[in-house]
Length: 488
Length: 96
Image 1: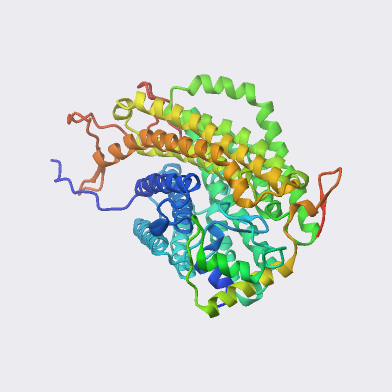
Image 2: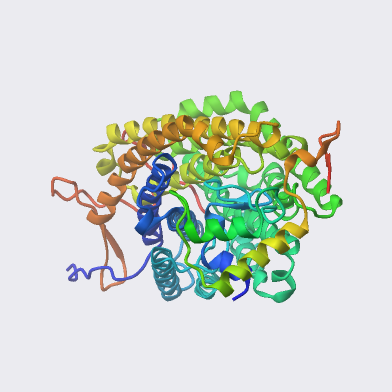
Protein backbone atom coordinates (compact mmCIF):
# COMPACT_ATOMS: atom_id res chain seq x y z
CA UNK A 1 0.00 0.00 0.00
CA UNK A 2 1.29 3.39 -0.90
CA UNK A 3 2.69 5.30 2.02
CA UNK A 4 1.50 8.80 2.69
CA UNK A 5 3.44 11.09 0.41
CA UNK A 6 5.73 13.53 2.13
CA UNK A 7 6.25 16.96 0.68
CA UNK A 8 9.74 17.35 -0.69
CA UNK A 9 11.85 19.49 1.60
CA UNK A 10 15.14 18.51 0.02
CA UNK A 11 16.98 21.05 -2.14
CA UNK A 12 17.71 19.83 -5.60
CA UNK A 13 19.52 21.25 -8.62
CA UNK A 14 16.25 22.49 -10.10
CA UNK A 15 16.01 25.06 -7.35
CA UNK A 16 19.29 26.57 -8.52
CA UNK A 17 17.75 26.97 -11.97
CA UNK A 18 14.63 28.60 -10.57
CA UNK A 19 16.60 31.09 -8.48
CA UNK A 20 18.63 31.82 -11.58
CA UNK A 21 15.55 32.47 -13.72
CA UNK A 22 14.15 34.88 -11.11
CA UNK A 23 17.49 36.70 -11.09
CA UNK A 24 17.38 36.89 -14.90
CA UNK A 25 13.97 38.59 -14.75
CA UNK A 26 15.22 40.98 -12.06
CA UNK A 27 18.40 41.69 -13.98
CA UNK A 28 16.41 42.60 -17.08
CA UNK A 29 14.16 44.95 -15.09
CA UNK A 30 17.21 46.74 -13.70
CA UNK A 31 18.65 46.81 -17.21
CA UNK A 32 15.54 48.52 -18.55
CA UNK A 33 15.81 51.19 -15.84
CA UNK A 34 19.48 51.66 -16.72
CA UNK A 35 18.71 52.06 -20.41
CA UNK A 36 16.04 54.66 -19.59
CA UNK A 37 18.65 56.56 -17.58
CA UNK A 38 20.69 56.84 -20.77
CA UNK A 39 17.72 58.31 -22.60
CA UNK A 40 16.16 60.38 -19.79
CA UNK A 41 19.00 61.94 -17.76
CA UNK A 42 18.08 62.10 -14.10
CA UNK A 43 15.43 59.35 -14.31
CA UNK A 44 15.06 57.92 -10.76
CA UNK A 45 18.34 59.66 -9.86
CA UNK A 46 17.37 60.43 -6.28
CA UNK A 47 16.67 56.81 -5.31
CA UNK A 48 18.20 54.56 -7.94
CA UNK A 49 20.96 56.46 -9.66
CA UNK A 50 23.06 54.71 -12.26
CA UNK A 51 25.88 53.78 -9.89
CA UNK A 52 23.29 51.57 -8.11
CA UNK A 53 21.37 50.36 -11.16
CA UNK A 54 24.39 49.19 -13.13
CA UNK A 55 25.67 46.78 -10.44
CA UNK A 56 22.10 45.70 -9.66
CA UNK A 57 21.72 44.73 -13.31
CA UNK A 58 25.18 43.21 -13.73
CA UNK A 59 25.21 41.19 -10.50
CA UNK A 60 21.68 39.89 -11.11
CA UNK A 61 22.58 38.56 -14.53
CA UNK A 62 26.00 37.26 -13.46
CA UNK A 63 24.35 35.31 -10.65
CA UNK A 64 21.67 34.08 -13.10
CA UNK A 65 24.53 32.61 -15.12
CA UNK A 66 26.31 31.16 -12.08
CA UNK A 67 23.21 29.70 -10.42
CA UNK A 68 21.89 28.17 -13.64
CA UNK A 69 25.35 26.83 -14.51
CA UNK A 70 25.70 25.24 -11.07
CA UNK A 71 22.19 23.78 -11.29
CA UNK A 72 22.83 22.34 -14.74
CA UNK A 73 26.14 20.75 -13.75
CA UNK A 74 24.64 19.26 -10.59
CA UNK A 75 21.59 17.93 -12.41
CA UNK A 76 23.59 16.45 -15.27
CA UNK A 77 26.12 14.96 -12.85
CA UNK A 78 23.24 13.04 -11.26
CA UNK A 79 22.09 11.87 -14.68
CA UNK A 80 25.59 10.97 -15.78
CA UNK A 81 26.50 8.96 -12.66
CA UNK A 82 23.02 7.45 -12.39
CA UNK A 83 22.87 8.16 -8.67
CA UNK A 84 22.34 10.95 -6.15
CA UNK A 85 25.04 13.51 -5.56
CA UNK A 86 27.64 12.85 -2.88
CA UNK A 87 25.77 14.96 -0.34
CA UNK A 88 22.25 16.38 -0.54
CA UNK A 89 22.96 18.25 2.68
CA UNK A 90 25.92 20.06 1.11
CA UNK A 91 23.71 20.87 -1.88
CA UNK A 92 21.16 22.50 0.45
CA UNK A 93 23.85 24.46 2.29
CA UNK A 94 25.33 25.64 -1.02
CA UNK A 95 21.92 26.79 -2.25
CA UNK A 96 21.13 28.81 0.85
CA UNK A 97 24.60 30.34 1.08
CA UNK A 98 24.18 31.66 -2.43
CA UNK A 99 20.60 32.84 -1.94
CA UNK A 100 21.55 34.64 1.28
CA UNK A 101 24.67 36.20 -0.22
CA UNK A 102 22.90 37.35 -3.39
CA UNK A 103 20.17 39.01 -1.30
CA UNK A 104 22.82 40.77 0.79
CA UNK A 105 24.66 41.90 -2.34
CA UNK A 106 21.56 43.31 -4.02
CA UNK A 107 20.54 44.90 -0.73
CA UNK A 108 23.93 46.56 -0.37
CA UNK A 109 23.60 48.06 -3.85
CA UNK A 110 20.10 49.38 -3.10
CA UNK A 111 21.53 50.93 0.04
CA UNK A 112 24.42 52.49 -1.90
CA UNK A 113 26.96 50.44 0.04
CA UNK A 114 29.82 49.42 -2.26
CA UNK A 115 33.54 48.90 -1.75
CA UNK A 116 34.42 46.34 -4.39
CA UNK A 117 35.30 46.65 -8.04
CA UNK A 118 33.62 46.62 -11.42
CA UNK A 119 31.36 43.54 -11.73
CA UNK A 120 31.96 42.70 -8.03
CA UNK A 121 30.97 46.08 -6.54
CA UNK A 122 29.74 44.67 -3.24
CA UNK A 123 31.68 45.05 0.04
CA UNK A 124 34.63 42.64 -0.20
CA UNK A 125 33.56 40.75 2.93
CA UNK A 126 30.72 39.22 0.88
CA UNK A 127 33.34 37.43 -1.23
CA UNK A 128 33.83 35.03 1.69
CA UNK A 129 30.43 33.30 1.51
CA UNK A 130 30.78 33.09 -2.29
CA UNK A 131 34.09 31.28 -1.82
CA UNK A 132 32.53 29.01 0.83
CA UNK A 133 29.51 28.19 -1.32
CA UNK A 134 31.65 27.49 -4.35
CA UNK A 135 34.01 25.29 -2.32
CA UNK A 136 31.01 23.22 -1.24
CA UNK A 137 29.98 22.97 -4.90
CA UNK A 138 33.49 21.75 -5.77
CA UNK A 139 33.50 19.13 -3.01
CA UNK A 140 30.07 17.82 -3.98
CA UNK A 141 30.94 17.65 -7.65
CA UNK A 142 34.36 16.02 -7.26
CA UNK A 143 33.12 13.50 -4.71
CA UNK A 144 30.16 12.64 -6.96
CA UNK A 145 32.35 12.08 -10.01
CA UNK A 146 35.07 10.37 -7.95
CA UNK A 147 37.48 9.83 -10.81
CA UNK A 148 38.46 11.68 -13.97
CA UNK A 149 39.86 8.54 -15.57
CA UNK A 150 38.31 7.67 -18.95
CA UNK A 151 35.67 10.33 -18.49
CA UNK A 152 34.11 12.22 -21.40
CA UNK A 153 35.15 15.79 -22.12
CA UNK A 154 32.23 17.42 -20.34
CA UNK A 155 33.32 15.92 -17.01
CA UNK A 156 36.72 17.52 -17.54
CA UNK A 157 35.12 20.82 -18.54
CA UNK A 158 32.94 20.82 -15.43
CA UNK A 159 35.97 20.02 -13.27
CA UNK A 160 37.90 22.88 -14.86
CA UNK A 161 35.09 25.35 -14.30
CA UNK A 162 34.40 24.23 -10.75
CA UNK A 163 38.00 24.19 -9.53
CA UNK A 164 39.23 27.07 -11.70
CA UNK A 165 36.51 29.50 -10.60
CA UNK A 166 37.40 28.98 -6.96
CA UNK A 167 41.08 29.85 -7.42
CA UNK A 168 40.50 32.68 -9.83
CA UNK A 169 37.77 34.28 -7.72
CA UNK A 170 40.30 34.41 -4.89
CA UNK A 171 42.78 35.96 -7.37
CA UNK A 172 40.22 38.65 -8.25
CA UNK A 173 40.36 39.72 -4.59
CA UNK A 174 44.16 40.15 -4.53
CA UNK A 175 43.63 43.92 -4.80
CA UNK A 176 42.98 43.83 -1.05
CA UNK A 177 46.72 43.33 -0.56
CA UNK A 178 48.74 46.59 -0.44
CA UNK A 179 51.23 45.28 -3.07
CA UNK A 180 48.44 45.34 -5.65
CA UNK A 181 46.28 48.13 -4.25
CA UNK A 182 49.04 50.72 -4.32
CA UNK A 183 49.90 50.36 -8.01
CA UNK A 184 47.04 51.07 -10.41
CA UNK A 185 48.61 49.29 -13.39
CA UNK A 186 49.52 46.14 -11.44
CA UNK A 187 46.06 46.17 -9.85
CA UNK A 188 44.19 46.55 -13.16
CA UNK A 189 46.36 43.90 -14.85
CA UNK A 190 45.52 41.28 -12.21
CA UNK A 191 41.88 42.45 -12.17
CA UNK A 192 41.35 41.93 -15.89
CA UNK A 193 43.41 38.75 -15.98
CA UNK A 194 41.13 37.29 -13.31
CA UNK A 195 37.92 38.56 -14.96
CA UNK A 196 38.82 37.01 -18.32
CA UNK A 197 39.63 33.70 -16.67
CA UNK A 198 36.48 33.73 -14.52
CA UNK A 199 34.36 34.06 -17.63
CA UNK A 200 36.37 31.20 -19.14
CA UNK A 201 35.55 29.07 -16.10
CA UNK A 202 31.81 29.64 -16.22
CA UNK A 203 31.94 29.01 -19.97
CA UNK A 204 33.51 25.63 -19.23
CA UNK A 205 30.52 24.76 -17.00
CA UNK A 206 27.99 25.93 -19.59
CA UNK A 207 29.61 24.50 -22.72
CA UNK A 208 30.27 21.21 -20.94
CA UNK A 209 26.57 21.01 -20.06
CA UNK A 210 25.66 21.90 -23.65
CA UNK A 211 27.77 19.01 -24.96
CA UNK A 212 26.13 16.66 -22.45
CA UNK A 213 22.68 17.86 -23.50
CA UNK A 214 23.47 17.40 -27.17
CA UNK A 215 24.63 13.85 -26.53
CA UNK A 216 21.41 13.23 -24.62
CA UNK A 217 19.33 14.59 -27.50
CA UNK A 218 21.19 12.76 -30.25
CA UNK A 219 21.86 9.54 -28.35
CA UNK A 220 25.41 9.65 -29.71
CA UNK A 221 28.01 9.43 -26.94
CA UNK A 222 31.06 9.25 -29.17
CA UNK A 223 31.75 12.99 -29.40
CA UNK A 224 32.44 13.36 -25.68
CA UNK A 225 35.24 10.82 -25.89
CA UNK A 226 36.66 12.02 -29.21
CA UNK A 227 40.09 13.54 -29.81
CA UNK A 228 38.46 16.58 -31.42
CA UNK A 229 36.40 17.27 -28.30
CA UNK A 230 39.48 17.16 -26.11
CA UNK A 231 41.49 19.24 -28.58
CA UNK A 232 38.85 21.97 -28.43
CA UNK A 233 38.73 21.67 -24.64
CA UNK A 234 42.49 22.25 -24.40
CA UNK A 235 42.24 25.14 -26.84
CA UNK A 236 39.62 26.69 -24.56
CA UNK A 237 41.81 26.08 -21.53
CA UNK A 238 44.80 27.65 -23.28
CA UNK A 239 42.74 30.77 -23.99
CA UNK A 240 41.37 30.81 -20.43
CA UNK A 241 44.91 31.06 -19.06
CA UNK A 242 46.66 33.25 -21.62
CA UNK A 243 44.41 35.43 -23.80
CA UNK A 244 43.34 37.89 -21.09
CA UNK A 245 45.61 40.78 -22.04
CA UNK A 246 43.25 41.57 -24.95
CA UNK A 247 41.24 43.43 -22.28
CA UNK A 248 44.16 45.77 -21.50
CA UNK A 249 46.04 46.47 -24.74
CA UNK A 250 45.84 50.20 -23.97
CA UNK A 251 47.36 49.93 -20.50
CA UNK A 252 51.07 50.69 -20.09
CA UNK A 253 52.03 47.06 -19.46
CA UNK A 254 54.90 44.95 -20.76
CA UNK A 255 54.54 44.66 -24.53
CA UNK A 256 55.24 40.90 -24.46
CA UNK A 257 52.10 40.36 -22.38
CA UNK A 258 50.12 42.12 -25.10
CA UNK A 259 51.76 40.00 -27.83
CA UNK A 260 50.95 36.77 -25.97
CA UNK A 261 47.32 37.83 -25.53
CA UNK A 262 47.09 38.72 -29.24
CA UNK A 263 48.58 35.45 -30.48
CA UNK A 264 46.55 33.26 -28.11
CA UNK A 265 43.31 35.12 -28.95
CA UNK A 266 43.94 34.44 -32.64
CA UNK A 267 43.87 30.67 -31.99
CA UNK A 268 40.11 31.12 -31.72
CA UNK A 269 40.19 31.42 -35.50
CA UNK A 270 40.52 27.62 -35.41
CA UNK A 271 37.13 27.43 -33.67
CA UNK A 272 35.61 29.87 -36.15
CA UNK A 273 37.08 27.95 -39.05
CA UNK A 274 35.71 24.67 -37.74
CA UNK A 275 32.25 26.16 -37.25
CA UNK A 276 32.18 27.40 -40.85
CA UNK A 277 33.54 24.08 -42.16
CA UNK A 278 30.91 22.06 -40.24
CA UNK A 279 28.06 24.46 -41.04
CA UNK A 280 26.43 22.29 -43.70
CA UNK A 281 26.42 19.26 -41.42
CA UNK A 282 24.95 21.28 -38.59
CA UNK A 283 22.05 22.30 -40.86
CA UNK A 284 21.18 18.61 -41.36
CA UNK A 285 21.32 18.08 -37.62
CA UNK A 286 19.08 21.10 -37.11
CA UNK A 287 16.46 19.60 -39.44
CA UNK A 288 16.49 16.40 -37.39
CA UNK A 289 16.02 17.98 -33.99
CA UNK A 290 14.39 21.34 -34.68
CA UNK A 291 11.12 20.28 -33.06
CA UNK A 292 12.84 19.87 -29.68
CA UNK A 293 12.62 22.95 -27.46
CA UNK A 294 16.06 22.58 -25.84
CA UNK A 295 17.63 22.07 -29.28
CA UNK A 296 16.03 25.28 -30.56
CA UNK A 297 18.01 27.19 -27.93
CA UNK A 298 21.22 25.26 -28.70
CA UNK A 299 20.78 26.12 -32.36
CA UNK A 300 20.17 29.81 -31.62
CA UNK A 301 23.27 29.84 -29.41
CA UNK A 302 25.27 28.35 -32.29
CA UNK A 303 24.37 31.27 -34.53
CA UNK A 304 25.18 33.80 -31.81
CA UNK A 305 28.50 32.05 -31.16
CA UNK A 306 29.40 32.51 -34.83
CA UNK A 307 28.49 36.23 -34.86
CA UNK A 308 30.05 37.00 -31.49
CA UNK A 309 33.22 35.06 -32.30
CA UNK A 310 33.75 37.18 -35.41
CA UNK A 311 33.34 40.38 -33.38
CA UNK A 312 35.51 39.08 -30.51
CA UNK A 313 38.34 38.01 -32.80
CA UNK A 314 38.28 41.40 -34.54
CA UNK A 315 38.35 43.20 -31.19
CA UNK A 316 41.27 41.05 -30.08
CA UNK A 317 43.49 42.50 -32.83
CA UNK A 318 45.28 45.37 -31.07
CA UNK A 319 45.12 47.60 -34.13
CA UNK A 320 41.32 47.28 -34.15
CA UNK A 321 41.03 47.22 -30.37
CA UNK A 322 42.25 50.78 -29.97
CA UNK A 323 39.14 51.82 -31.93
CA UNK A 324 36.64 49.66 -30.03
CA UNK A 325 38.11 49.87 -26.52
CA UNK A 326 36.15 52.18 -24.26
CA UNK A 327 33.16 52.26 -26.60
CA UNK A 328 29.76 50.60 -26.76
CA UNK A 329 31.21 47.98 -29.10
CA UNK A 330 32.64 46.45 -25.93
CA UNK A 331 29.15 46.50 -24.42
CA UNK A 332 27.83 44.79 -27.56
CA UNK A 333 30.43 42.07 -27.09
CA UNK A 334 29.56 41.57 -23.41
CA UNK A 335 25.80 41.55 -24.02
CA UNK A 336 26.09 39.49 -27.16
CA UNK A 337 27.97 36.75 -25.38
CA UNK A 338 26.12 36.73 -22.06
CA UNK A 339 22.69 36.88 -23.69
CA UNK A 340 23.18 35.28 -27.08
CA UNK A 341 25.48 32.50 -25.97
CA UNK A 342 25.41 31.92 -22.21
CA UNK A 343 21.70 32.65 -21.65
CA UNK A 344 20.56 30.74 -24.75
CA UNK A 345 22.54 27.67 -23.69
CA UNK A 346 21.29 27.92 -20.10
CA UNK A 347 17.70 28.26 -21.32
CA UNK A 348 18.23 25.03 -23.27
CA UNK A 349 19.26 23.34 -20.03
CA UNK A 350 16.39 24.90 -18.09
CA UNK A 351 13.88 23.54 -20.59
CA UNK A 352 15.55 20.16 -20.59
CA UNK A 353 15.76 19.84 -16.82
CA UNK A 354 12.65 21.71 -15.64
CA UNK A 355 10.26 20.74 -18.42
CA UNK A 356 10.82 17.02 -18.78
CA UNK A 357 7.06 16.42 -18.88
CA UNK A 358 6.36 17.27 -22.50
CA UNK A 359 2.58 17.15 -22.12
CA UNK A 360 2.55 20.21 -19.90
CA UNK A 361 5.11 22.09 -21.90
CA UNK A 362 3.19 21.50 -25.14
CA UNK A 363 0.44 23.74 -23.83
CA UNK A 364 2.94 26.60 -23.98
CA UNK A 365 4.44 25.69 -27.36
CA UNK A 366 3.07 28.70 -29.23
CA UNK A 367 4.16 31.04 -26.43
CA UNK A 368 7.65 29.54 -26.42
CA UNK A 369 7.95 29.89 -30.21
CA UNK A 370 6.85 33.55 -29.97
CA UNK A 371 9.25 34.16 -27.11
CA UNK A 372 12.08 32.65 -29.12
CA UNK A 373 11.40 34.90 -32.11
CA UNK A 374 11.00 38.04 -29.99
CA UNK A 375 14.19 37.37 -28.02
CA UNK A 376 16.40 36.65 -31.00
CA UNK A 377 14.95 39.44 -33.13
CA UNK A 378 15.19 42.06 -30.42
CA UNK A 379 18.67 40.90 -29.43
CA UNK A 380 19.86 41.53 -32.97
CA UNK A 381 18.46 45.08 -32.94
CA UNK A 382 19.85 45.61 -29.42
CA UNK A 383 23.37 44.66 -30.49
CA UNK A 384 23.25 46.63 -33.76
CA UNK A 385 22.26 49.74 -31.78
CA UNK A 386 25.19 49.22 -29.41
CA UNK A 387 27.67 48.69 -32.24
CA UNK A 388 26.31 51.82 -33.95
CA UNK A 389 26.75 53.87 -30.79
CA UNK A 390 30.22 52.40 -30.37
CA UNK A 391 31.30 53.37 -33.86
CA UNK A 392 30.15 56.95 -33.30
CA UNK A 393 31.96 57.14 -29.97
CA UNK A 394 35.06 55.67 -31.56
CA UNK A 395 34.98 58.40 -34.22
CA UNK A 396 34.86 60.98 -31.43
CA UNK A 397 37.68 59.29 -29.48
CA UNK A 398 39.98 58.87 -32.45
CA UNK A 399 39.02 61.95 -34.40
CA UNK A 400 39.95 65.57 -34.03
CA UNK A 401 36.48 66.98 -33.42
CA UNK A 402 36.45 69.38 -30.54
CA UNK A 403 32.96 68.63 -29.28
CA UNK A 404 32.53 67.88 -25.60
CA UNK A 405 31.73 64.49 -24.10
CA UNK A 406 28.15 65.53 -23.29
CA UNK A 407 27.60 66.78 -26.83
CA UNK A 408 28.91 63.51 -28.21
CA UNK A 409 26.57 61.55 -25.89
CA UNK A 410 23.69 63.75 -27.05
CA UNK A 411 24.37 62.68 -30.63
CA UNK A 412 24.07 59.03 -29.57
CA UNK A 413 20.53 59.37 -28.18
CA UNK A 414 18.83 57.72 -31.22
CA UNK A 415 21.02 54.65 -30.65
CA UNK A 416 20.17 54.65 -26.93
CA UNK A 417 16.45 54.94 -27.66
CA UNK A 418 16.66 51.97 -30.06
CA UNK A 419 18.65 50.04 -27.47
CA UNK A 420 16.07 50.81 -24.74
CA UNK A 421 13.11 49.75 -26.91
CA UNK A 422 14.89 46.57 -28.00
CA UNK A 423 15.63 45.90 -24.33
CA UNK A 424 11.93 46.12 -23.52
CA UNK A 425 11.16 43.58 -26.22
CA UNK A 426 13.97 41.35 -24.94
CA UNK A 427 12.36 41.43 -21.50
CA UNK A 428 8.96 40.61 -23.00
CA UNK A 429 10.42 37.73 -25.00
CA UNK A 430 12.26 36.22 -22.07
CA UNK A 431 9.15 36.58 -19.91
CA UNK A 432 7.24 34.49 -22.46
CA UNK A 433 9.93 31.84 -22.17
CA UNK A 434 10.39 31.90 -18.41
CA UNK A 435 6.71 31.90 -17.44
CA UNK A 436 6.03 28.27 -18.51
CA UNK A 437 9.08 27.12 -16.58
CA UNK A 438 7.90 28.94 -13.46
CA UNK A 439 4.44 27.44 -13.83
CA UNK A 440 5.77 23.94 -14.29
CA UNK A 441 8.09 24.26 -11.33
CA UNK A 442 5.27 25.48 -9.08
CA UNK A 443 2.97 22.68 -10.17
CA UNK A 444 5.47 19.90 -10.15
CA UNK A 445 5.83 18.05 -6.88
CA UNK A 446 8.68 15.69 -6.46
CA UNK A 447 7.77 13.49 -3.53
CA UNK A 448 9.57 10.83 -1.62
CA UNK A 449 7.80 7.72 -0.44
CA UNK A 450 8.86 6.40 2.91
CA UNK A 451 10.10 3.22 1.21
CA UNK A 452 12.80 5.35 -0.43
CA UNK A 453 11.51 5.50 -4.02
CA UNK A 454 10.69 8.65 -5.87
CA UNK A 455 7.26 9.30 -7.30
CA UNK A 456 7.13 12.24 -9.62
CA UNK A 457 3.56 13.38 -9.46
CA UNK A 458 2.98 15.37 -12.57
CA UNK A 459 -0.26 17.25 -12.83
CA UNK A 460 -1.80 18.50 -16.00
CA UNK A 461 -2.71 22.12 -15.85
CA UNK A 462 -6.40 21.20 -15.83
CA UNK A 463 -5.85 19.21 -12.61
CA UNK A 464 -5.96 15.64 -13.94
CA UNK A 465 -3.05 13.42 -13.02
CA UNK A 466 -0.91 11.94 -15.76
CA UNK A 467 0.43 8.43 -15.79
CA UNK A 468 3.75 8.14 -14.00
CA UNK A 469 6.63 8.71 -16.41
CA UNK A 470 10.20 7.51 -15.86
CA UNK A 471 12.67 10.22 -14.92
CA UNK A 472 15.31 11.56 -17.25
CA UNK A 473 13.63 10.36 -20.40
CA UNK A 474 14.22 12.95 -23.12
CA UNK A 475 11.07 13.63 -25.05
CA UNK A 476 10.25 15.66 -28.09
CA UNK A 477 7.90 18.58 -27.98
CA UNK A 478 5.50 16.71 -30.31
CA UNK A 479 5.33 13.63 -28.08
CA UNK A 480 7.82 11.30 -29.82
CA UNK A 481 10.33 9.75 -27.49
CA UNK A 482 14.00 9.60 -28.23
CA UNK A 483 16.38 6.80 -27.41
CA UNK A 484 17.46 7.33 -23.85
CA UNK A 485 21.10 7.99 -23.33
CA UNK A 486 22.65 4.75 -22.19
CA UNK A 487 24.94 5.13 -19.23
CA UNK A 488 27.95 2.88 -18.77
CA UNK B 1 39.91 56.27 3.73
CA UNK B 2 42.26 56.28 0.75
CA UNK B 3 41.19 57.88 -2.48
CA UNK B 4 41.02 54.48 -4.19
CA UNK B 5 38.60 53.22 -1.55
CA UNK B 6 36.47 56.34 -1.92
CA UNK B 7 36.41 55.73 -5.69
CA UNK B 8 35.23 52.17 -4.99
CA UNK B 9 32.84 53.01 -2.15
CA UNK B 10 30.99 55.54 -4.36
CA UNK B 11 31.19 53.11 -7.30
CA UNK B 12 32.56 55.72 -9.69
CA UNK B 13 33.47 52.93 -12.12
CA UNK B 14 29.76 52.38 -12.83
CA UNK B 15 29.82 55.47 -15.06
CA UNK B 16 33.49 56.37 -15.57
CA UNK B 17 36.44 54.59 -17.05
CA UNK B 18 40.11 54.35 -16.25
CA UNK B 19 42.10 53.36 -19.31
CA UNK B 20 38.80 52.78 -21.09
CA UNK B 21 37.63 50.19 -18.55
CA UNK B 22 34.46 50.91 -16.65
CA UNK B 23 30.97 52.23 -17.38
CA UNK B 24 30.20 54.43 -20.37
CA UNK B 25 27.65 56.91 -19.07
CA UNK B 26 30.41 59.36 -18.11
CA UNK B 27 33.82 60.21 -19.55
CA UNK B 28 37.18 58.48 -19.06
CA UNK B 29 38.92 60.02 -16.04
CA UNK B 30 42.43 58.55 -16.43
CA UNK B 31 44.03 61.89 -17.25
CA UNK B 32 41.43 64.30 -15.89
CA UNK B 33 44.00 65.57 -13.36
CA UNK B 34 46.38 66.94 -16.00
CA UNK B 35 43.94 67.64 -18.86
CA UNK B 36 43.94 71.18 -20.18
CA UNK B 37 41.18 73.24 -18.60
CA UNK B 38 40.44 70.52 -16.02
CA UNK B 39 42.45 69.44 -12.97
CA UNK B 40 41.81 69.37 -9.19
CA UNK B 41 39.34 72.26 -9.00
CA UNK B 42 37.34 70.84 -11.92
CA UNK B 43 37.22 67.41 -10.25
CA UNK B 44 36.09 68.94 -6.94
CA UNK B 45 33.34 70.95 -8.61
CA UNK B 46 31.84 67.98 -10.42
CA UNK B 47 32.01 65.67 -7.41
CA UNK B 48 30.33 68.17 -5.10
CA UNK B 49 27.75 69.60 -7.51
CA UNK B 50 26.98 66.63 -9.75
CA UNK B 51 25.18 66.91 -13.08
CA UNK B 52 21.65 66.04 -14.25
CA UNK B 53 22.86 62.43 -14.44
CA UNK B 54 25.62 62.32 -11.80
CA UNK B 55 24.71 62.53 -8.11
CA UNK B 56 26.20 65.30 -5.99
CA UNK B 57 28.52 63.39 -3.69
CA UNK B 58 28.75 65.43 -0.55
CA UNK B 59 32.21 64.29 0.47
CA UNK B 60 34.08 65.64 3.44
CA UNK B 61 37.12 67.76 2.63
CA UNK B 62 39.54 64.99 3.65
CA UNK B 63 37.70 62.52 1.37
CA UNK B 64 37.68 64.91 -1.55
CA UNK B 65 41.40 65.56 -1.14
CA UNK B 66 42.07 61.82 -1.07
CA UNK B 67 39.99 61.24 -4.20
CA UNK B 68 41.80 64.01 -6.07
CA UNK B 69 45.13 62.54 -4.95
CA UNK B 70 44.01 59.11 -6.27
CA UNK B 71 43.19 60.65 -9.65
CA UNK B 72 46.63 62.32 -9.62
CA UNK B 73 48.20 58.88 -9.05
CA UNK B 74 46.14 57.42 -11.92
CA UNK B 75 47.14 60.30 -14.19
CA UNK B 76 50.82 59.78 -13.40
CA UNK B 77 50.64 56.10 -14.45
CA UNK B 78 50.27 56.86 -18.17
CA UNK B 79 48.09 58.20 -20.92
CA UNK B 80 44.73 56.68 -21.90
CA UNK B 81 44.28 58.48 -25.21
CA UNK B 82 44.01 55.74 -27.89
CA UNK B 83 45.25 58.22 -30.54
CA UNK B 84 48.76 57.94 -29.11
CA UNK B 85 49.28 54.41 -30.48
CA UNK B 86 51.05 53.66 -33.74
CA UNK B 87 49.52 50.77 -35.68
CA UNK B 88 51.83 48.16 -37.26
CA UNK B 89 51.08 46.08 -40.36
CA UNK B 90 50.90 42.89 -38.27
CA UNK B 91 48.08 44.26 -36.12
CA UNK B 92 50.24 45.12 -33.14
CA UNK B 93 50.41 48.60 -31.68
CA UNK B 94 53.22 50.71 -30.33
CA UNK B 95 52.74 53.32 -27.71
CA UNK B 96 53.42 53.61 -24.04
